[in-house]
Amino acid sequence: MAWHRLLSRAAIAGLLAMVGTAKGQETETGNHPDWPRWCGKVYEAGYPAFDPGGQTVEPAPHPDAPLLHIQIKPRYNLYLSSEDEAELIVRSEISPYHGTPWNTSSSSSDRANWFIFTVNLVDTDDVIISNKIIVNNTSTEPQINILSFPLSRLGKPPSLKPIELVLYGAPEGGHPTWTTTTSILYLPDRGAAAKRSSVTKIDNLSGSLFFRPGGGNSNNSSSSSSTTTTTTTTTFEPFFPYGFFASYDGFLGRNDSTAQIQAYHDLGFNAMTPLTNYSGSERNFEYMDELGLRIMYNLRENYKNLDYVREQVESYVLDSEGVFAYWSTDEPDGWQDPFHFPSDAYTLLHALDPYHPVALVLNCQNYYFPHYSSPSDIIMSDVYPIGINATFSKWNTSCTPTLGDCGCDNCAGNLQDVPNRLDDLSRYEKWLGLWPKTKMHNPQSFHGQDYWLRDPSREETYVMALLAVNHGAKGLISWVWPASDLLGRAHGGLAKVLTRSPVVELLLGKYYQARGYVQGDGGPFAAKVVVTGNQGIEVVDAAFWVRTEDSGKKKMLLSVVNGGYVDINSLVSIKLPVNGGTIESIPWDNGGSQKVEWKLERSTLTASRLPALGTFLLVLDLFSV
Ligand SMILES: *[C@@H]1O[C@H](CO)[C@@H](O)[C@H](O)[C@H]1NC(C)=O
Ligand SMILES: *[C@@H]1O[C@H](CO)[C@@H](O)[C@H](O)[C@H]1NC(C)=O
Ligand SMILES: *[C@@H]1O[C@H](CO)[C@@H](O)[C@H](O)[C@H]1NC(C)=O
Ligand SMILES: *[C@@H]1O[C@H](CO)[C@@H](O)[C@H](O)[C@H]1NC(C)=O
Ligand SMILES: *[C@@H]1O[C@H](CO)[C@@H](O)[C@H](O)[C@H]1NC(C)=O
Ligand SMILES: *[C@@H]1O[C@H](CO)[C@@H](O)[C@H](O)[C@H]1NC(C)=O
Ligand SMILES: *[C@@H]1O[C@H](CO)[C@@H](O)[C@H](O)[C@H]1NC(C)=O
Ligand SMILES: *[C@@H]1O[C@H](CO)[C@@H](O)[C@H](O)[C@H]1NC(C)=O
Ligand SMILES: *[C@@H]1O[C@H](CO)[C@@H](O)[C@H](O)[C@H]1NC(C)=O
Ligand SMILES: *[C@@H]1O[C@H](CO)[C@@H](O)[C@H](O)[C@H]1NC(C)=O
Image (cartoon, rainbow, N blue to C red; front, side):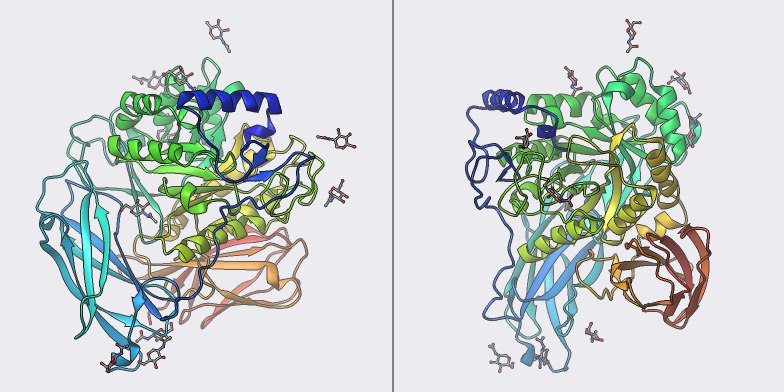
């Protein structure tokens, strides 16, 4: 949420002056830093349009392409001393931009080549993995290989310091030409030592979060049943955070907000980002723990003050029961914050507390993405397209890629802005050769400030939330609570489905098997599928997730969204990479009063019709192949 929209220009100038005094004279990023800008563009009337700078663009294809781009990551961003095994992901991709030329003609087989490698500890050069993988040069999708190894091979006691790893690779029979590095966290499990202390793992394969609450604070015995024992456990629950940024004024700032927090929880939310800190709101934070409501901890007002950041970590978060992430900074790109502020906060947070990931919010569509996204583990996107005038602003300027602020940066002012932004972020990562980060979306649940004429409707809310999920969002935190009764209930209703069984396990599936996504930009595992039908079909969006259960049974979660405002009254076909199965359940059906008939025959799922703004989640029980 953009504060400049709430403040007068004079107040902003005052605010910036204060920031300036905190750490010498800091310069904003981009061009014309002395003019009133948002996302690098001047937004008040009376200034010329200019190139804001900082765009991420598609790199020119490498002259020696095809290249083989090899990247490695630990499967989870951290491992605990109570665990024995770790996994390493080797991601290989035939890329026009990144990597080293791959001599396809050296292969004996037509379509595959062997890539041979070792993964070594940087400091001792000890080998922890020695293996080979097939490189499929006809596939433009990244190939994922998961290799496990015992943590004892790291040869080190657990500590807060990341352990550096390096991969050396070569084509079979060729010279080692590939080198790539990563680091792995092998941390002391504080579960036994500290009475509280939650831990969040990020699955680097899918970006999903897995959460283990701390054990001590709550007097509600059921809220942390899996971890109340003092013996440490590695039980991490799949965790899809769904909630709101919750205001201090009129909500958490009351002397006792427990009844309000209870009501919020009872609507179905499992997470909250309080717009305040622990000090002075102790009872509220404790009550959230009692309810099992997980917290994204707010640092944004003071994140530039590292003493403050340290104090928050050490006095509360490090030993908290329910904190699942930090929220370090809000729209630093919109504010054109100097790059070092978000990155100083991030570095300190990881040094003090590697147990909790750091989230930040981006507002701009394409303004210094690599700089502003790098100091984060989770990127949240602010895209508020409903009720805006996307072409002319309240400041009496037009809005273009070089001018103006219409409340949603470079938006069209419709529902598609939400998935388009998530796709943009994924595309930048691909262009830059970066490992994709966890994404979340901040749904619009407000109006006002002369930018947003109205709230989204209930149906628009569902469409935007599920389009975000289809395009890779692993959490939904709306701006802002208290919201209208209608939006509170709408989001709460969907939260009850997305955060619970059977949907959450499929959505965040630990044992992901979805490989063949058709259109590449939906994130690695929100696999987009081809949908066919008559008029209106181009705004139908479907995605699936597949999970193999321990029994070997395969299940699919399919999400279908009609993002259009018109009914599709004819048959809609969705082609799935399956060999038949049955529809086990329909956990979410917002298709209105006239029932939609679903049928699965071989690999084709059909819907008898798709009402305007209809949203559906289906669980399919797949026949074994
Ligand atoms: C590719 O491999 C083939 C067969 O090993 C070899 O003859 C050729 O010189 C290689 N080409 C390059 C550019 O290295
Ligand atoms: C894949 O390898 C085959 C030979 O093994 C080669 O003919 C083909 O051009 C390669 N394709 C790409 C996209 O590199
Ligand atoms: C290589 O990838 C293509 C396209 O995804 C696929 O059709 C083919 O089966 C793959 N080949 C191998 C050997 O995995
Ligand atoms: C236990 O919970 C109740 C309300 O559920 C609260 O009033 C009480 O203060 C809590 N006790 C402790 C020790 O947290
Ligand atoms: C206790 O925790 C459970 C699980 O988180 C929650 O559903 C329930 O509402 C809580 N009960 C009370 C009295 O706080
Ligand atoms: C909070 O409690 C104090 C002391 O009882 C009281 O003076 C104050 O008005 C209360 N504030 C609110 C917002 O209720
Ligand atoms: C956070 O806590 C400090 C005391 O540690 C307090 O002075 C400050 O006003 C609080 N900030 C916010 C944003 O609540
Ligand atoms: C946006 O505002 C301009 C200027 O007031 C107006 O001409 C235009 O019709 C508006 N567009 C929309 C979609 O409301
Ligand atoms: C925009 O123009 C209108 C009409 O000329 C004027 O009333 C309004 O004050 C202007 N707004 C700003 C922010 O300059
Ligand atoms: C993967 O793990 C690294 C730590 O090795 C972490 O910084 C990064 O955010 C993770 N990426 C994803 C997609 O979860």
